[in-house]
Picture 1: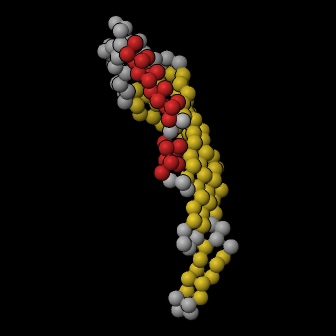
Picture 2: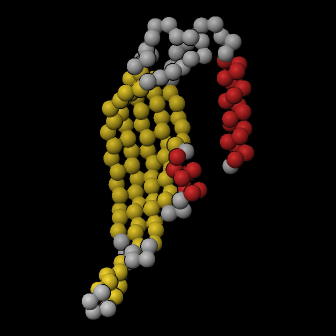
Picture 3: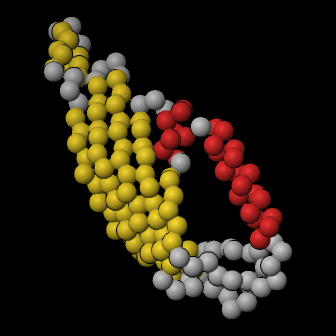
Length: 145
């Protein structure tokens, strides 16, 4: 996987160097599709959580964008006194506006300051299939499953 990330980074660098030779700034139009890498990178450090999502942005005007994201998240961990599980999927949709909408931008400068309104919804199933109730007075432990 690191090989593909390295190749993508080199390709992006080559395209950005090539794009610097243009003399006039042309605003980006169209749509983008991507993967949110926070979840996969987090799962390297935290084996209890798995998150994966796709996102897309569509340009309406030069400074107005439609945003959408869909994904899933699974959490499973065991502690000394309980087990916990949470599984589900989610989506977010919304609009973003670029506050740095200047008439004339410098070549190679695609700075954005985005403000938006979003709506999100998640369907989650969660539970604790096993937990321990410890009573120090009678020295009895109760396992509930």
